[in-house]
Image 1 (cartoon, rainbow, N blue to C red):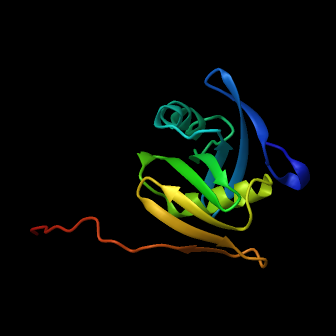
Image 2 (image 1 turned 30 degrees about the vertical axis):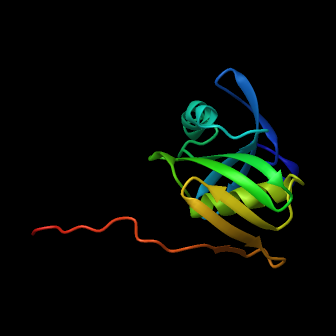
Length: 145
């Protein structure tokens, strides 16, 4: 991918018979973000695996389908590399907000709706990204050794 000053912002990529405008963001791990009028499970289930393994990403990438609800609110569906569709992804929520702002779709403080719950993401003026949300136990177990 190429872009302005080495950035990949809204770059057209051919995948699954269509062109998708991708924005690539690193949060210490790779993320490919694209925007749709309405985020659907059908769409992320179709495009997620194809984008995760696209030749542009030889080490694969996390994929996020983003629906902009308002300049301060988005809905994100996630397909994580090596795991498939997941209920939430913290770095993905952060990457989605950065991508949304870089594309002029939101501000820098955004409420992110994920299937697993909501997160508040703040991209500060000093380029740090802060995530606020609940910490909830989702599993406990016992293992015999």
